[in-house]
Each structure stands twice: as C-alpha cells, then as structure tokens.
Amino acid sequence: MLRHSIRRLISLGVTGAMLAACTSAQSDARLADCPVDVDLANLVAASDHILIARMDFTSTLLVEEASSASPQYVEIPLLVEAWIKGGNDDHVSLRHFPSDAPHKPTMELMANLAGKPAILFLTQVDEGPIGLYFAGYSPDALRSSDEDTIDAIRHEVARQSSITNGWQTDTSLPHFEEVSDLIAQLGVVSGVQQQRVFDSLIDLGADAVPAMVSQMEDHRPLRTPSISLENRSPAAFEATRHYQPNLVVDGLDAVLNKITGFGGSIVNGGSDRTREAAVAGWQMYALDMGCAALKSEGK
Image (tube, rainbow, N blue to C red; front, side, top):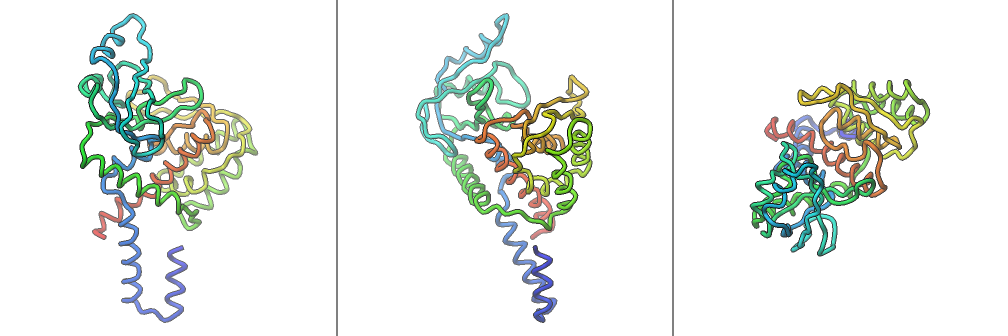
C-alpha cells in the first residue's frame, strides 16, 4: 500500500525531499502505534480478561494440595474490584494446578497476595475443563496492584482495542501471495498433503507471520482434523506435538505458535468466542513485530 502511494506522489511531481518527509511522517505515525512495553503488550493480547481482585484462599492451600498423593486443580474464588479487560461479573473463580513452573506465577507469590488486591491476566476456556486460567504462559500473569501498573495496562488495552477495531488486510505484506495459495489448499487436501501445506507455511518462517495472521480468519473445516509439529524445545518430553484442529483458523494458530511461541489457544479447536479472541491476539502480535525494527532505526 505504501509503495503505491509513493508512485502516486512521484507522478504528481513530488520532490525527493518532500517524499522523504512524507515517508518519515508515516514511520513516525506507525511508531506511535507501537507498545511501550512489548512483554506487557503480548500478555495483554493473550488475555481474555484482566482484572483487579482479591484471591480468597488460605495461604497454605496450594502447598497442601501440591504435597498430596494426587494433586488436583483448585478453584480459587476471586473477589473482583475492577475489570480492566473483558468480563463484568463480581464473583468469578480461577482454576489453578498447584505446582511451580516457569510458565506461570509461583505458589509463593500467590500465597503472598492471597486476600490482597492483585492484578490477574486470565484466559477463558469454553470447552473441556471450562474456566478461567492464568494467561500467556507467563509468570507475570499475576502482579501486585499499584496505580502505575494499572495505568500502563489500561493504556495498552486501549491501544490494542483501537488497532484491532480498525484492522485491515494488507496484500503488500511479504509472502502474501505464497501464503494465500497455501491457505487456499487447506480444506481441500487431506492427510499427508494437508500436513505438507502446514509444513510449507512453517518453512516460510517469521517473515511470513504477518501475512498468515492477515489471512487466518478462515472458518472452513479441515479435511483431516490433525497436525503434527516437530518439538525442538530443549525441555520437550516428546519429539513431535500432535494437535486436533477442526477449522483452518485452528491449524494456522498451531503453525504460528510453532514459528513464534505465541498463541496456541485454539490448536485443538475452540468456541467462536475463543477463536475471535485468538485472532485478535495474533493481529496485535503481528502488528507489533515491526516495532522493534522501527525503534532500531531511531524513528
């Protein structure tokens, strides 16, 4: 889109200096859309709900359940003080498995914040073990509540809402046509051929992520509800991950998660609400990918 605008300006006799100023202004405008804190932006994008609440449980509950012979998920009531993103219910609960792992808040932090105002970033599961869980596979999904942090989160939520509401497909993105041709095959081919399409999308790499995101809102059913992805994580306990996506959008979520490590909430399908939230999260992720390059240029 930008290059077409540039050609038009040249045809109208715009000088090089004027064109440079115009391009610089466009870059400045794009930079203004970038997040102040990328990690916070990703966590907000991955969250269905963000709220200020008091976790209503005894500080020893998690340790006691974790040390039992067969630990189970615990339901922790949340006494809501304010919603920053999402819901509107004053009484909800958090489902949490009592263990410590790098991808979630520690049991110590949860115990320390029990009964105190805290900020929770949550994802909503509508199928299977339904409920609210900590979002983003991040230890930062639980934070102590203070005005500066709350203001920063509100600003980021507003930024993302404004951008997703005005989202438009950009056919000038790198690999757009290649991605379009591959996605068109999904829902048509099956079995090994379908897996090859997914593999070809993965092989395009990070440069093609924005083009995939731009075209991922495709609700056609897959001919084969399956995708297998090589697991290269050093901590992996299996060489290949197997998922059961139902729609094209589900399979693309798995492909994008494989490339970036972000998302992955609908790799096994989901509700319409879950899919809509997943696509919105990916749109923010894709848009913010270009921010690091803009900042490095000193724009």
